[in-house]
Structures are given as structure tokens and as C-alpha cells.
Image 1 (tube, one colour):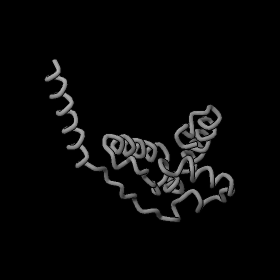
Image 2 (image 1 turned 120 degrees about the vertical axis):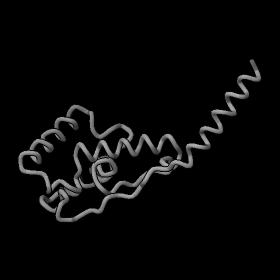
Image 3 (image 1 turned 180 degrees about the vertical axis):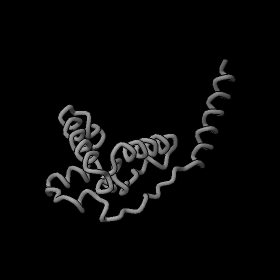
Amino acid sequence: MKRFIKIAVLILAIAFIAIQFFQIDKTNPPVVQSETIESMTSVPPDVSIIMGKACNDCHTNKTVYPWYSYIQPNGWFLRSHVDDGRKEMNFSKFATYDDRKRAKKLEEICEEVTAGNMPLPSYT
């Protein structure tokens, strides 16, 4: 039994080391200033600070990945989280949404923040 545990730990350690060679792409898509939410509305400074801290990493093309994104599988999870966040709503592309979609997204922001669902606790 001891030998089995040693072999299992060794295999897990090798697997953990091996997956470190599969890093995520941390390249952000370009930000076209005329497509951002800031290009179409004046965001109050206090709201801009909150958005910068709690929203921008997942909902813009200005993601700053934390140090632990270099450790897999954390990086894979974070990349998936960012991709999902951008797909749901991207402040870097907000001006490209039609009027109806923009209104709906702003309404959803209010609902999510009021319900305490956003920002995620890890970003506050």
C-alpha cells in the first residue's frame, strides 16, 4: 500500500509539472476607444474606480492576469472565466451594441449588483 501511494504521488507530481507547459494566451484583443462605454457616456469617477477594480478584468479587453494565472489549472479556469465574462458583456465593445442591447445590459448590471451576484466576492 505504501508503494502504491508513493507511485500515485509521483504520477500526480509529474502530471502537475507537465501541465505547467500548457500556458494560457494572455494577449488581450485590441481596444478601439470609439467602441468603449466611455466613448458614449460620461462614467462618474467613483463608478469608474469600482469598474476598474471589480469589472474590467472580466468584462473588458484590458484584462490584467494575476500571478497565479501562471499556475495551471488556475490559468485555464481564469481564462475561461474571462472569456465567459467578455461574451456576456464587454465594456470595450459596449458602443457596438444596438440601443436595445445596451439598455438590457445596463438593466442586467443593476439587477446583478443589487442582488449581490456581481461583482464576484473575489473582486471586492
